[in-house]
Length: 236
Image (cartoon, rainbow, N blue to C red):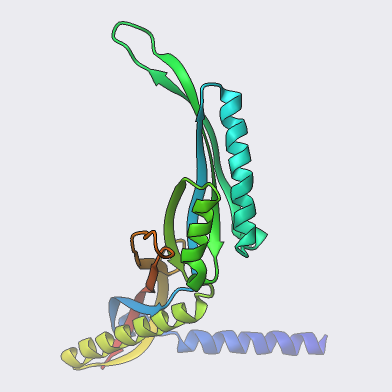
């Protein structure tokens, strides 16, 4: 019981100390809100492409059958290019009718179009052009991309965050100097972005395909951005 009483007394003492250190509203200094932005760039190491097969036939079953056969060859080419299974994901399978329209008549179905699309991550960017050429040779007749990303963005995000903090601190000190005060402390920090994470901004370039060489690719740099909202307290 004595130990319990001592612990309670200690806790009350800590609370009293904390309350005593809390500044009253009238004693608080000027509050300054600052929105800061930091950016950091790095050459990306992953490319994402969307690749697929589109087939047409008068019969819906034939359109799907042709598409499946051509897609099988395409999937084999993707795997042969060294793409890991975890980096291959089906994003859409579609079968739609083709119509013929005539004046004063109901639209007539003249055939069907089948589509099958997969998303592929290429982790060896120096082989991306060759991969695209191999997929085209294997029957791919629909390719979109590439979009580039950084495989491990955390270190780049950390640099962007540091730059945002440095920018905010410089501006807080500038305001304090102009007001004849000084920065006492940071009251709060909040980070804004896409889903709470810095938003990637892509700067990419893809050159046109040439018959005499593999498709040239220029990944450029990927820039990650961090937006911070900070509140500083200034004091005399």
